[in-house]
Amino acid sequence: MRILLAVDGSSSASRALELVANLPWPPGSIVRVVAALDIAPALWGGPWIPAIPAGADEYEAQALLDLTRVIEASRLRLASAGLAVETDLLRGAPAFAIPDEAKLWKPDLTVVGSRGHGPVEAALLGSVSSAVVDHAVMPVLVARGDHVRSIVLAEDGSPAGIAARDVVLGWSAFAGIPVRVVGVVDVAAPWRSGIAPTMFSAAMDLYSEMIANSRETYGQVVAATVATLQAAGRTAEGDLREGEPADQLVHAVHDVAGDLIVIGSRGHTGVSRIVMGSVAHSVLLHSRCSVLVVKQPHPPR
Image (tube, rainbow, N blue to C red; front, side):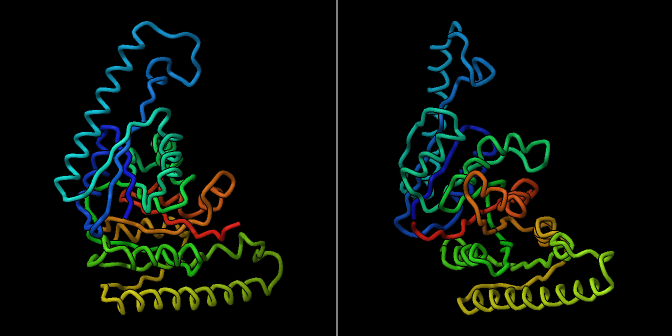
């Protein structure tokens, strides 16, 4: 398995490093540790460069030395965990350099840290972690802890949900970890689709029927996924909830003291992030635990 790990010397990156070191990856796995050197914001406070300030060369040399030490310390930690490691120092803004490296190296998984999980801290997350998630084709793990002892798997029966299930089922790093399969019936969805109880008297009957159908469908999907995991020897249980999907997934993790949410995403670039933003991106921003975003497979053009 090929794992791309981004580090920068921060505490969040250190948690990502420990998470990678602690998980039981399959034999032959290789971790590529990268850090991106971008001194422009520190020197000029923004992306525009009106003039080269005095001492820029010295500052760059020190930043280069610091990141080199971070990379080497990360290499030694991973090597002590029995992993094969290679390293590289990238040039440019991390939000661009890391996704570009992922496109070139084609990892099975990219792992990054996250400095925040709430609305105020979203700008920090968005600068790197969200950019990596948005532009990645393969799964991205945004680490907020250094271990995984329980998993919440978001399941809705979609191709993206199935891809997330297959990762939990197929990756040996998650073998032996109990899984709670969570399906969420969005009881407000009919109103957002244009049905309103004030339109006509039959609206409530139609609403009730749609919700009943959703409960049945999601119940079957959750039960099928639990059965699939159990047939493979995994410890799994189902949890059918109602409400806003992102909120319910975050609550589900809190209820079971989960360490990781695994969720599928339909989009991965630009405009298609709007699709992801409805659930996966909201979970990514507001969850206090690690989040693994698995992209829906796209057929080749």
